[in-house]
Image (cartoon, rainbow, N blue to C red):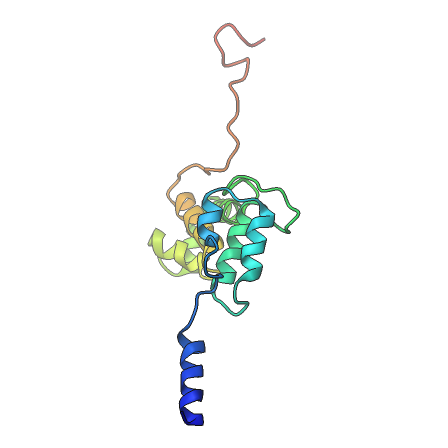
Length: 162
């Protein structure tokens, strides 16, 4: 085998080979969906190829459940403090506060194009989705899905009040 052939085989192996996760181990997605602890998810992420584009997705998913370090305690997906929820709430407030100004700045009166215009400054994934959906709901007059629900007050309950 010539040096060129060995080089070509080596380049082909590295260019085409492998996954970003170790063979034989559960995938990050499977472990995430199964409710794995932060430490387990960080182990899988840390064993992946650092140049893999999947690292960004893994980091976003880790943040969405409160896994900021391997010592973190995992919380619920898309909780009130997830990237999605924070992006959703901020864009809902922006777009519902003054929809006409939001449309004007976006240069269109189409709600979907306006929401996409606002979201284009966000990273793809949870941040983009939260921004887009929050703005679209705000422009459509839909309630903020992360707004706390208020219990009925004594004044509105039968027999209650002052």
